[in-house]
Image 1 (cartoon, rainbow, N blue to C red):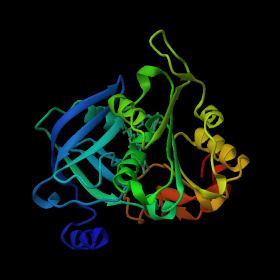
Image 2 (cartoon, rainbow, N blue to C red; image 1 turned 90 degrees about the vertical axis):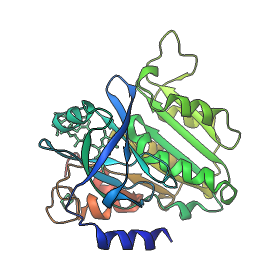
Image 3 (cartoon, rainbow, N blue to C red; image 1 turned 90 degrees about the horizontal axis):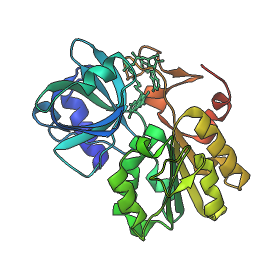
Length: 286
Ligand SMILES: Cc1cc2nc3c(=O)[nH]c(=O)nc-3n(C[C@H](O)[C@H](O)[C@H](O)COP(=O)(O)OP(=O)(O)OC[C@H]3O[C@@H](n4cnc5c(N)ncnc54)[C@H](O)[C@@H]3O)c2cc1C
Ligand code: FES
């Protein structure tokens, strides 16, 4: 049904044209990361996406950047993008106010293969802003909770103030349906939780390695160590999926900017089964 809706939309929306979206609100998650909620109407009415997909977000007159969709795929009418302010375009987007208009085209790319985890335990591992593309996956899994075994969410940030979605993390931590473990690299006086990199959290959970599917997103170094840890514990590489990032331009497989070895991240990724990217992950820049 979802795929059918997407097919219909693809016919009416040009994939190279940014369509206007109005900013409903901006929530600052921490000092340099914010979540933009956009109203979807006009040509974007009925916009549908799958967890893990991204949009090209356009600050008119400045430029366009790839940003994962971080809201619940079942929510209609609005869309969230959680954005780390790092350079020209993300800074311009951070300065937008309620009612301002930005451009949007998408959704693009592959999605988290939720059905690969049906009947199995799910282990979501994220670092920093890597939780943004995984949040829609967690929403979808929670909505279909009966179809899965244990649902484990491991999340690491640099410091307590850097953690995204703090209210939601608290909610997940109090939800008996999800095992949520959060860690920070550096604590502060307010932090009573775990300190250490995200892979240290594996010491606190026992995975049923033959029955677990892992979804991983974060800085590349974090993903490498996470994959090492998962494999060290006995997960097969076909049970691991990760989301990759490279600079994007067209987002539709024409320009080659996002080339990652023999693949283009905009159309073959960003979500890959580990065997497709395993050797590339060991190379510094491709
Ligand atoms: C599929 C995909 C999904 C993405 N999803 C998100 C998302 O959900 N949220 C998000 O914030 N970003 C996301 N990104 C990354 C985002 O596209 C880049 O951060 C963005 O292009 C930066 O644009 P800019 O014009 O602000 O920075 P630029 O002006 O291009 O860069 C300015 C400086 O920032 C550095 N820089 C660029 N990108 C990063 C980065 N990611 N981290 C640290 N330094 C950086 C550059 O090296 C440069 O020094 C995603 C990228 C891809 C490919
Ligand atoms: S961004 Fe142009 S080919 Fe991927």
